[in-house]
Image (cartoon, rainbow, N blue to C red):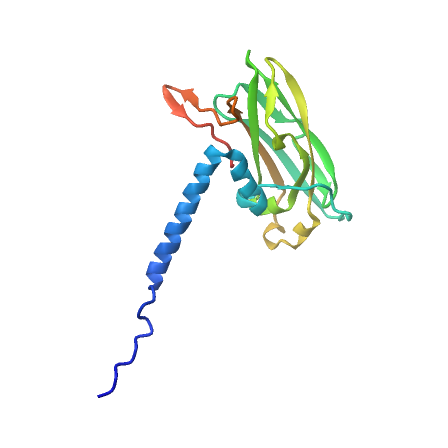
Length: 209
C-alpha cells in the first residue's frame, strides 16, 4: 500500500487568509499613525517627511549644485483650523521656478484675538507624488509660532524642486505644484487644542498631516 502524497497546501495559509492578515496589519498601522498624529504631531510629521506620504514635502540643508532649464509653476495656499483666530495666507499666490533653483517667498499671518496664541503649521503638496521632490531649506513650519494679541508678521520659506522630478512619469503632465499650509492651535504643552463648535467638541482639521 503506497503512502499518501503530502498535500503541498497543508500547513500554509490560504491566499484569502494572507489577504486578511495583511489588511488587518495595514489597518492597525493606519490607526496607530492616526493616533500618533494627535498624540505626537512631530512623530507623525517625521514619518511623512521621510516617506513623502500624502504629499509631504522634504527638508534639506542646501540646494543642488545644478539648475535645470525646465520650469515648474508652484502655487501657495494658506488655511487656519477651527478655533484659531488668525488670518493667514501667501504673499505670492504662485511663482515659476527652475528645477533645482533656490527660491524664497513668504506668508503673512495676523493674530486676530486679544490673547497670545501658539500654533503649528502642517503642510503638504499636490499632486502627492511631488512631495518627495519638493524640498524646504527654511520654513516657519519647522517650529511652533507664538503671536501676541494683534501681532502680524511675514514668515519666509526657502525651497527648491529637485531636478530629478523630470524623471517622474506620473508628474510629466502635471500642471504645477500646490504647496498648502494649515495652522492649528496648540496649548501651552504643545498639544493640539480642540475647538467647541455648536456645543460639540471638534478636533482641529488640517488639509493633511
